[in-house]
Image 1 (cartoon, rainbow, N blue to C red):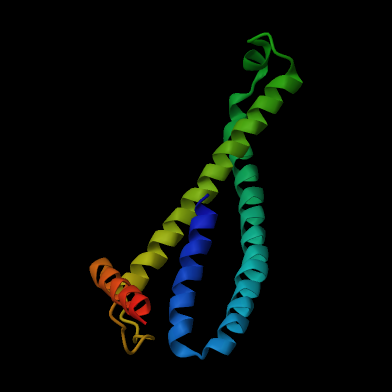
Image 2 (cartoon, rainbow, N blue to C red):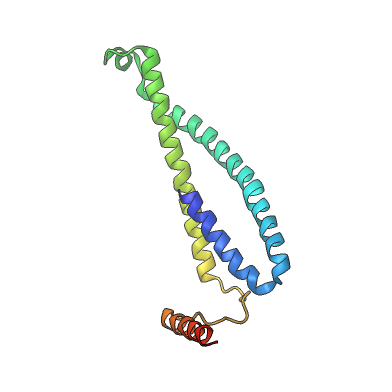
Amino acid sequence: MFRSVAYAAISISLMVILQDIMPFHIFFMALSIFNMFHMIIGGVAGAAAYSYGLEFYMADNMSRYSEFFDHISLGLGGLTFGEKIEMFERGLMIVSIKQIYGWAAYLCLTVGLVLLLYKVPLVRKGYRKMLGWRDVGYGLRKRFKNEEQS
């Protein structure tokens, strides 16, 4: 869900910037190139980072939390050794994924703060004023009246 929201935000911001800085016949070509970059290269780099993080945190958590298994705790609970290890590994994977996404959230917040605090020269040099709904309605009403009269 968050990935889709991020893609939508990136696409909307790119479209707004692109429509100001390039002619219309090149707009869709630039948009498709951007989509190739962020979907293919970004997806591969993100998957590689997440798989490396999962590998690291699974090993780290296994070494940290496996000390809780001893002969006494393995004999309690009425479960077999395989069932206990399966539950243990499932819990470790959940903890590892939470750690990875926690670091990803910290990274996103840091990048967002840097972008908010850092003064970037404006890409959009001239802003077009967005009309209010009342002005749009008056313009449509005027156009329909002119079409009816002619």
